[in-house]
Length: 465
Image (cartoon, helix red, strand yellow):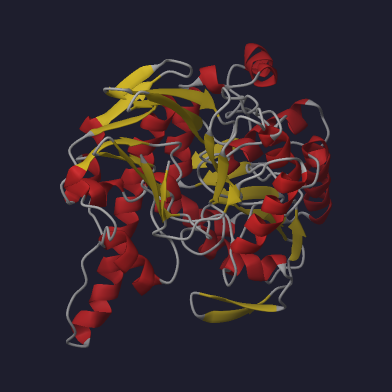
């Protein structure tokens, strides 16, 4: 048996790990690599380390694009096997992959208008909506804890990762040459006591563990005080009659914010003001949430018994139509506009920022991780002037950052999860899905509590089990 590390190695994007077992090939995740456009396109287009047509099965941990976003390219290049995931991940994948394909088609359409005028060759999208649709018949939904066989001698179980709706930690039992090996793959690990979802579950002890390390050396603010901070922001906007503009990812973060506002209003911690969720993808993802209450924690279940729908309430409006989106700019505050993308790089959020960033009554509320060089990161770092659609804007609106809503386990939470394993049984931990500096800090913490072998693989590394 061999493990080849193909994506999310010493970086946090493009999750993909290649297992070679008894001459057959399997993948854990098939994520889209996101970075500089030309480099990312080449990495996503070319499967350098294996032939897609020779992959026998694919297991996906959850529906974020950096974990599922390159499946249409895999299928386009000959993959015909089964794709295994949880039921909620399957439903979210239908929404997310259609949206990913649509974005790529529109981006290429925009770029090609310029290239055509310049007499240059036209680009093609990495994949189309039709390519995304070809993925759906291959998806096989499995329940948490249900043991299923993907091939002779290979059994799989999913355990709740507590990261996003349907996210799973994968536990594999592999029998090869008379030996039994237990392999675990964390996917993205969530946080204890996180809103809406159940806590991450401990999987049985394993010999080898592929563990995410996004925040291996960082520490989050406590979750418990989040609603009080949000209520304070709402009250400030009411006093100013201003708008709160929230760049938020359409999957998970938008639903968390809406749920928090619902609780704040019911507790009378702030006056009820209009809330607009301006994103077609957010609207579709929220419908999937409503269809999967089995993923919710007890607090959310109890809330549903009282209020039925945690993602819908008086003063909340979901917007999909472009004209309705534009009309928000003419409305007076106080109000809240939640829109994608979370890093403020694309989508309708750019128009809302452009129309509201120069008004000192307004608040820009940043609630998630923003990569280096993104508009979101520049706002977090309080740059006085930013560019939106190529034009410069003075930032007069107040920028407020709430760091407690990260859906990734931090260093203490990752370490706490790993401590639950039998350290003597664990032969090796492989740190993936993290920048090198975070992985090095996390590796030192794991070694300090007794783990003997902690590896940080590079892309393309092959290790024999």
